[in-house]
Each structure stands twice: as C-alpha cells, then as structure tokens.
Image 1: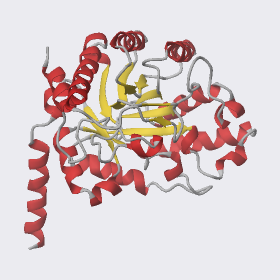
Image 2: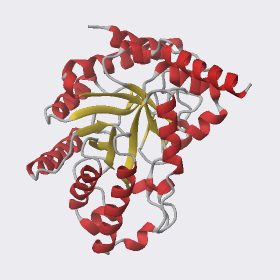
Image 3: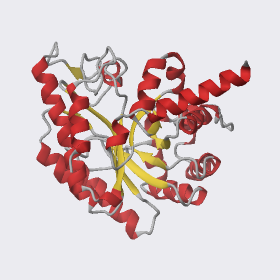
Image 4: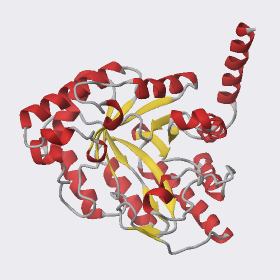
Length: 349
C-alpha cells in the first residue's frame, strides 16, 4: 500500500508539472515568491503555483533572520524546505536575500561599528550558506536595497555605517567564492520610476564592474503603481540592460492606490475595484512584459517573478494597511484580466 501511494503521489506531481501555465508561454523563467509553510496548509495555492510557474523565491524563509536567528548558529532547515519544494516540482530556486537591512536578526546590531567582527561574520555566513547550496540555487539577491528609499545616496544601514560601500563588494566576492556559477544580483525597489535612484544604482554597478567585483545581475523589484508611465519603465530597463547584467523583474505586483514606502503608509484612493480598473491593470501587466521583452536582450532575461500571485495573500494590504488588488489572481483564486494580459504578452512575438 505504501509503495502504491508513493507511486500515485509521484504521478500526481508529474501531472501537475505537465499542466499548461504561464511558464509554458515564456522564453524565460516565470516565478512567484512563496512560503513552503504556507503551502503546506494552502494546497490550492500550491497546485496553482506548480501549474503556472517554473521558478520559486522564498518570501521570508531564506533571509538572515530565519537562517541566523541565534548568534553563532545557523538553521538551514527553512532553506532546505525551499530546496526540497523546488526539486520536487522541477523549479528553479532563487535565493532571496543574503544581506538586507530589514532581515537582520536581533543580535546583529551589537556588531555595528566593529568592522572586523561584522566582516568576519558576513564572510562566514555567506561562505557557509551559499556553499551549502552550491549548484542548487541558481542565483542570489546578494545585497537587497542598498540605496536610499528615494533619490540618490546609499541607505544608512549598519552594514554601510560599519563597512562603507565596500560591504556590497565584499558580499559579492564572498558569494562568488562560495559558488562561482551562481548569478549574483543587487536588487532594489523604485528604480523603475525614480530616475535619480536608478542612476545612483547604475553608478554603484559601474564602480563594482570597474573594481572587477563579480556582479552578474540587477534586480528590479517592480512593486509599481498603475500611474507609472510606461516610458519611464522602459527607460529604466533599457539603462539596466546596458550594464550587460542579467535583468530580473524580481517582485512584481501592480497597485491602484498609493503609499509612502513605509509600513502602514498606504493611501486608500480607490475603495472598490471595478471591471474597468481590472481591464486597465491587465493592459499594464501586458505592457510590462512587452517592455521587458523589447529592451532586455534574450541573453540577459533572467525572468519575471511575482511577489505572490493572488489578492488573497498579497503582502501589499497587510504591510501598507490598504485594500488593493495588485496580483494576477483574485481573492477567490481565479485568474484576473491581469493574468490574461500577462499571458498575451508572453505569447507575442
């Protein structure tokens, strides 16, 4: 009986992977951020994910606050679960994120100001972590959100205040030492619409490249609003592609309302969704994919990843205290016009 059940589950897994989804219309990987813990309870979302996507990113469980929660000890079980999910469903695993100011464990601030200790920890952490998954994680957001929220300038994190901008170079070098074949990204938000921040990011990339630092990718988070002009987005992606790096649209969603980029900072402009708004959102999703395909050379198309694919579980509403509808599936787990628009663009030549 156990053998029969195992065989049935294996056949079911193969069948789920074989179903047609967005992944089958794309020339590059299509993914979503997930929690394997959440999927253990929400099997409907898991099954839709398996049908639609061939790439997966952990929304939280591969961040430092999960892996290095206790000083002097690494807990790789959360990342192991992500790897098991990716291998079971034949999906590319993307690592998010090694160094991010908002995912530092509670004990880490005691190292602020101690450059030797902080650098030593970062090197050990990245070597141990990336080395453990060498050849199994396709790419990493090595440094996430190094720039200011808006405009030019570096974000004043404990990493920057203790190690200067060299912390980014060090992190990339350590990651490359641990896995020379992994695609190594810097990842940030608003760079698709804030041209001052974009150019500061490009300046950082040029510095890294001039210093022969092994950077190989640029991630555009793409948490965008409906009112961001397509021309601005196209300009940003074109400038990003000119670096020669892999370009990843890494955390895509499209909101109707607005916010100030801070937790709880949502501004509720639209109290309800209308069919006309949904159709417009579908067109915006279509436009994003068409722009990506147009201005990013095929050899640099690392893929497009949604930061959650359903309005039922979007991070937007809880974080910004909004009621919004930013994803391609609605709260009843049905595909929206956004899904159809995204699909149309993938199918277009």
